[in-house]
Image 1: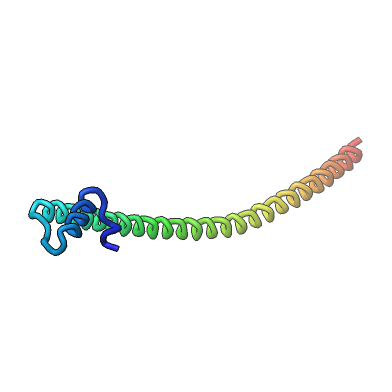
Image 2: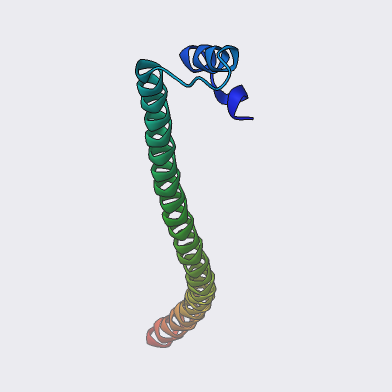
Length: 119
């Protein structure tokens, strides 16, 4: 499995090592392989850090979404209450207008009666 991960220079080093039997690697080949391994380790470390940061951002975003949904729910509830209150006020205004019209009609009737008495 380790051999399948090696590409380019690393694969060539592995092939030379197999060809030479147990003779070993040259110091330059070993240094190049070591450098590739260190770069791979660094890359994995950076990717893990990036994933951790992305997970944290996702968690924060989910939290903000939940808070937004909660505020939206409260706003809808308040809107419903205000809507009911507005409907009650509109009914009250209609009733007051109707009562005003009745009073106006009665006053006009009384004024007509007063006018007829004076003649």
